Image (cartoon, rainbow, N blue to C red):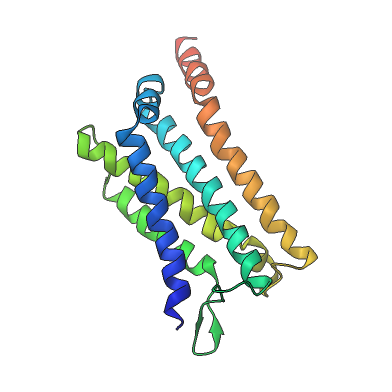
Length: 183
C-alpha cells in the first residue's frame, strides 16, 4: 500500500476535524452559531453540510490532481488493486453510525457538545468520501472521469441540498408538527 496517499486523505480529514472544532469552540463564529441556532440537531446538520462541502470539493481537487499526474498525488493501491476513497467513507460512516448508536455526542454536557460537533464533521466528510464515487456504485466500474461519472456530482449536490433543507426547514417542520398535535 502506498502510505503517502493514505496519509494525504487521513491528514486532510484530521485537518478538517481540527479546524472545524477550533472554529466551533474557539472563535466568535462558534459562539454565534451556538447562540442563534439553539436546536442541537440543526447545528449538527449545518456542521455536517459544511464538512460535506469542504470534503467533497477537496476530493474533487485531489482526484483532478491524480488524474492529471500532478505530483506528489497518486492512487492508493494495495496488492495492485486501486482502493477507492469510497472505501474510507464507508468505514467512517460505519464508525460514526456506531458512535451515534452508543449515544456519543447526544447528551448535554460540554464534552458531549464537542463530541456532537466531531460526529457531525466526520459524518459530513464520510458522506462526501462515499458519494463522490456514487457513479462507481451504479456502474460497478471506475467511471469517475467518464460521462457516467456525472452521477457522482449529482448525488453530491442532492445530498448537500438535503442537509441544507434539514437545517433550514427544521423550524417549519417542528411548527407543522406542533400545529398537527393541537388540531
